[in-house]
Image 1 (cartoon, rainbow, N blue to C red):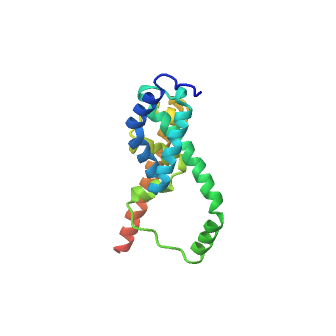
Image 2 (image 1 turned 90 degrees about the horizontal axis):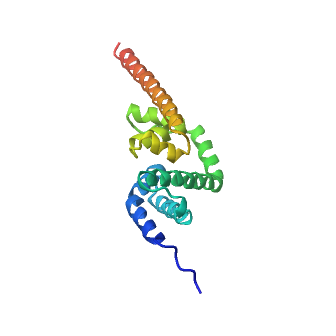
Image 3 (image 1 turned 120 degrees about the vertical axis):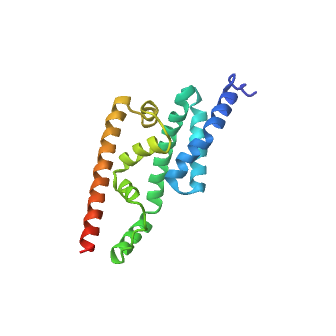
Length: 179
């Protein structure tokens, strides 16, 4: 005979799945660029949440906890993709060295953003795209609020410096071009 499900588990899971599915899918889509990969990673994220249902925090901390799970699922996915595509990446790199491609037109802020270290980009993305506060980011990243405040301050400072340097070089290049 099957053990009966624990009281309210399915209902609880269904409620937080419905409330967070779109947000977590958006988080994954912005980081994968593939709707198929994002859908698979979403399923993996919620499978882990189901298995660890007793650990899922309630209320405002549910979504940041899910972002943390999704972040780790995405990291595992990326490592696996890296292993599966090592040869392709090496070939692509060799071709890029022999025939460098022109960068796609983009805003200077977007270019500077992509120059930032991955950790800074992730932190600034959690603030801008996911609209999380420091407590929620701390839950997502698995660190203290104070660590988030410090890291966020430093990431913003690095972004500002890079953006200012980019703007100065653009102004200088335009000035020299008009002579």
